[in-house]
Length: 422
Picture (tube, rainbow, N blue to C red):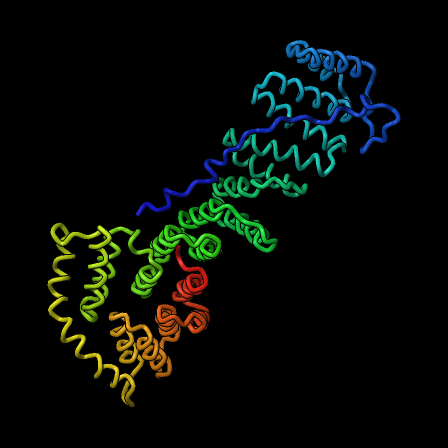
């Protein structure tokens, strides 16, 4: 299955480095202005060279500006002087439009600005965000991670800074940290009532699936399905979870959930066949129904699929006797000798005939039996109640599953009840 290939990081982030226009150095301000930070102290020699650089910049003479800046750099001895030179170097690089020069100049501006105590939180947030973009475009992901972290620490409000940080962390071999970064900003935006782009969730899901991290995958995809409950998202979530969880004991229940949600028709033919193979020996009607749905969806063809034709041939003749056995099975499940397994099987039998209300009754009986697998029975109860129209009952049943391999499926079940696939 290759579903994760559809995920993309905001169309490769679509980043374009914005124009960088640092404030004019303090020495160039009028005396009557109150500086927001300490004025730069410059020697006459450095001041003279920078004045020449400023003249060259105004006339758009990049070569002359670079020469004047280089002279000033050779004369600069203090952090103040080095910071002033870095400002003009950056403006000169911006005049040329040379990305490499811009990146180098920005790095120097940040380093010298920090040393000179000239970077306010606002400037830090801005400059480190620019540095993040340059580093990301250069595929220097270690530098990207450091710069994005610094931008966030400075209070950056750039909408993509967390996404870029997460991508860099993932590329640096830290998928768990990357997913946590995305989850943090997603949770914060949700708490503030703000929308989150669907690509953010998708990217987090992709990271978790590739790293085979089921718990983070479930957390971020449940948030995704709450915000964007499209059938394609349900399909990708459930079948990628099926791949990474490896929970064989819940496989039939996951396939039943995918069918109930409406995601099964988007899946590959193998999922229809796996479903039918799981039920045809005990519940032939359910197997035939599933295969017929696959045929109607154009996913199966009995003429070319040997498994499809064989299961249909074996199951169809059994349906009449199977249906005739329902009354006695229900009666036995309600009797004094019933066990958890017999009551659960009776529920599964009528579930296969889409008698969801009766199936729910049997699952409730099963829950009351000694040795009951409460997680399994509650999940199937929730699935039956939801399809019988009892949403509150379904959520209560799903909510009763708190741990074990059924817990993720129950979590998805609760999301589905409140946010049906569209």
